[in-house]
Length: 246
Image (cartoon, rainbow, N blue to C red; front, side, top):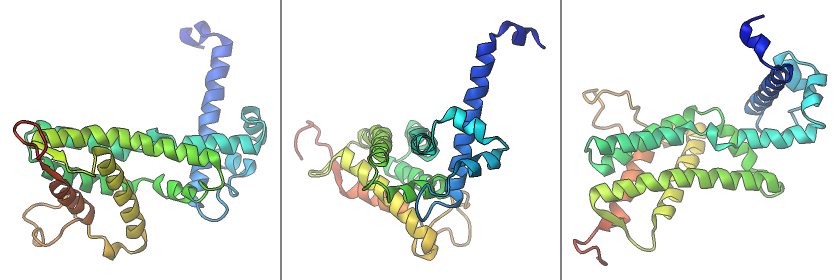
């Protein structure tokens, strides 16, 4: 036993082990949902299936949750926690980095949107969110969690759009607002991701890794990034020098 172990209270070690067990079981449940996200959502996530996946016992499971329903409630909160949306943070970093480098704000948005679409397509939680959307009409918890999820994404996107507008000396044209622009972008990436999964040939993409001198560099394009750039250029207008109405 190390000096640190000797100094740590027994209750502390038990609490750490309990927290680790809880996190491990939640991730096992999420993995089951990712593999079987369709049908009667959550029906495939049983206590036995979860513990067998990670080599734990049903006793350990029910020590953490009094019932399977209680586990399902925590599992939904775990899956829909905004912390599991790395693509949004990556897009924010890309936009702010591009603006700091003095690049054209419209082009910065375009490239960030392209990268965001790639990240969303690669995110294992996205199919899970789409499956859970089907429950929002019958399950108030799902509806609340999805709303919080959407609100969090909007709160991240609005400041970066405002930064692009300021850097380019532009403003939103009514009735559009920065908030509606953020909602539109979010809906586009989610809808196009679903369409790409079913019919990829209908959603042109251009990998970020493609060199500018590639043979087809001038003909390949990406639907989402291009659309975001077009929107930025068309639903906004130059801010008058006096800051008044155009």
